Length: 117
Image 1 (tube, rainbow, N blue to C red):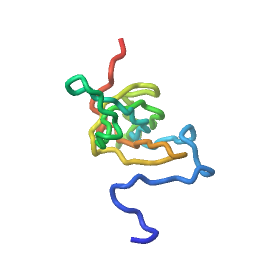
Image 2: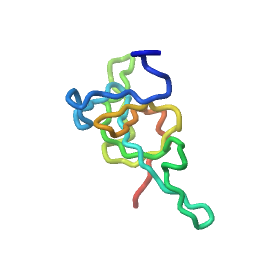
Image 3: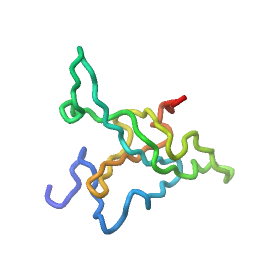
Image 4: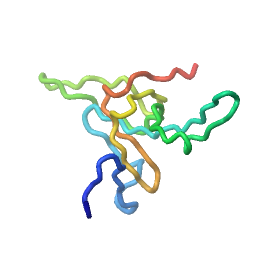
């Protein structure tokens, strides 16, 4: 389909228009930078480029203000900028900015925060 968006491919934003630091998610959305991991199987390190699976871990780059409730208040977000999170594999939407891939997920797509302590 010429000129259209192909399902499954990340949306690409022109570099002059926006940078990752300018993204301000709305509602309960979170911008995540995927973490590429190497997996060891039987002592052999398999690079993520060969695995071709979408990552399920990432670093939170930006957090929205929280979901608006019917009474006008906002539900506070459980994650904050800098958190390493585990999220559902196919829930977030992909976005490419300056040839770098980011994910935009809803709070409900985030399953856990990785405790670095």
